Image (cartoon, rainbow, N blue to C red):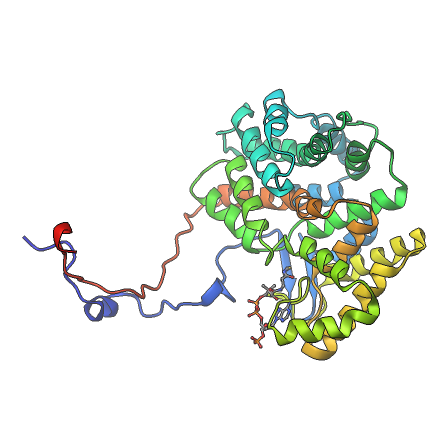
Amino acid sequence: MRPFFVDTLEQVLPRMNMTEQNTRGLAGVVAAETGLSFIDGAEGRLWYRGFDVHALAKHASYLESVYLLWYDALPAAIELSAFEGTLARQRALPPAVLDALRCLPADAAPMAALRTAVSALGQVDPEADDISHEADLRKAGRLVAQLPTIVATFDRFRRDLDLVDPDPELDHAANFLYMLSGTRPSETAARALDTSWLLYLEHGLNASTFTTRVVASTLADMHSAITAGISALKGPLHGGANEKAMEMLLEIGTAGSVPSFVDTALEQKQKIMGFGHRVYRTEDPRATHLRRMAEELSLEAGDSRWYDVSRRLEVEMFERKGLHCNVDFYCATVYYSLGLAIDLFTPLFAVGRTAGWAAHVMEQHMHNKLIRPRAEYTGELDRPWVPIDRR
Ligand SMILES: CC(C)(COP(=O)(O)OP(=O)(O)OC[C@H]1O[C@@H](n2cnc3c(N)ncnc32)[C@H](O)[C@@H]1OP(=O)(O)O)[C@@H](O)C(=O)NCCC(=O)NCCS
């Protein structure tokens, strides 16, 4: 009988399709079709469903942009208010999820708590395994409504504070800040958070979105895919960068210390968090708005320290490395100015991105093809079997 595994690598390779190429990190590889967003990395432009993100950041709210992404049309006023109302009524968490959050250690990373809670939501969702488009839309709505509640609830549990019920009169961002702090936020604060979520909403096949599509392509459910997306976002090379950027700004301390900090970091070949991008070769269009908001919030607070440090670092990085800042850089200053705990920055990125992930899950479910690439094998073949007593 022919042994199962007899070919040498030299025999196997010619039979493989030699047009297959190993592209490290899948840079430049087109792995899916999408109608959700388009990034022009050379020109630094981004469109959601064909609408320039600059126009959306100026005129639209986060939920208006979510509606656009899910339904491929700008909502009329009556449609938007019905959409907002439906989501506002679904903000409360089921008791099982509250219990799960209550059981977590107070020093758990909020991003890990969010991952656990979204997975727990999937356990109790009545439509968890229904992947029809209608059920996907309803589950996506519930997730978008409930993620801010998860973040606020975990934060209040760990600070040993009573929970604050969601207020259906408040919009999406204002309600989150209210549930977190117990006081109604200023209009500027709520608008800044809302716009940051709009800018985080969707960004093509980044690592976390690709992850959600891979999970969805096995015909797994929405909650599984979003849980996986949160896991991929957690790393410092992706969503974790906004927290690392703030820790770095605090370490630098003053604008005057920026040059020596950059000297040391570059000498030690360290990555400066919040700079560089796989796709953009010029300014990240999202950073333009976050820089403006960081400046406005600093002026309003009468303390421009962190904006000044950020600005100096931005100039220094461009002069020394030709690198532009990305979405996470000024977001750090914006969230810090809003008084948010640093370890909530990445969970808040996830809150904004969930609607984008959900849109990709729906797109994948509607036009599914299992995502299953190949790896370039770099090991040996036909190693001789050695019985255990002779190893
Ligand atoms: C985003 C990121 C992962 C893109 O990575 P990439 O496309 O694989 O690019 P590389 O990491 O290969 O970087 C290319 C070159 O730019 C340099 N570079 C890229 N980002 C850098 C940064 N933030 N600080 C210092 N140097 C950087 C690399 O050292 C490399 O230089 P070299 O060619 O001399 O070795 C990378 O820029 C990074 O790690 N940034 C910091 C983390 C971050 O802000 N992530 C959020 C992204 S939205």
